[in-house]
Length: 372
Image (cartoon, rainbow, N blue to C red; front, side, top):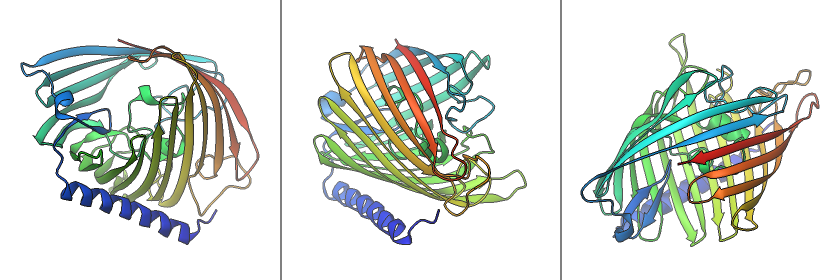
């Protein structure tokens, strides 16, 4: 499938305008506020609400999860067919896992670390290990191992996911966690600017990506909505000492009201796409929403489209590493508690090839999370 060059130019233009606008607003209006860090994002707050304990305080927490799928062709998460960082990858398989985190808070300084034990792998994996160091009002630097600042869906905590499986486009094009540094700024209007350098991504099934530079800007359009733009430039090292370029550009829009949440994202990639060690052009998008019926129940709808190779397709064989596909998800999220993630997610999804043989797949997914 050939992508219209005019569409690509328009998308790049919007990315550039959004980043420039965020940068100008931040530079012209220094923020008299602190910023508090979520997982993969920052939020503007008043200085009184962002202050941490002045004497220093440790907090210990964790999460237990149980996941199940009866889909014969489940979505591959983080592109590791060996099992690492893959959710619900076998038919009729229960997958338990356990996370433990610790954080130290003092004034505006924060140290955070998180590890996960995979029962199927019988292995402990380090997820996060970083420090947030304040640089002044509305500014900080994050140092260590953390999620890459790119887009919405997979840069946020998994407790914010709308569905059990993330979209195909972010599974393929989001690099995950790595060691690096991120300089992050926010102004009084809630606009944000993040830029940094990441190295040694190792959550994909191939060799790691190195020396990736990212820039992300978020423009607050209203008290309930934001427009974001992300750019990631780097390289993917091959085993033969060669490398493939990584060039990824994204736009995202998010809306949050008292009873409605809408997430949407568009990503275009030129170079390594996370699936095959070849240079290719890829593009995909998703739109997901959750409607809150009451304090316990959310109704979820999700649709995503992804073409991992815009120039080549396989007409004879089913190949989700070359051919475009569409996925539809309907679900119910039941919250035993919203303050901590204690919820049961029930999803049914349909995956429909848009190119090649029409081998439609569908299946049921369940995830139960208990955070403490």
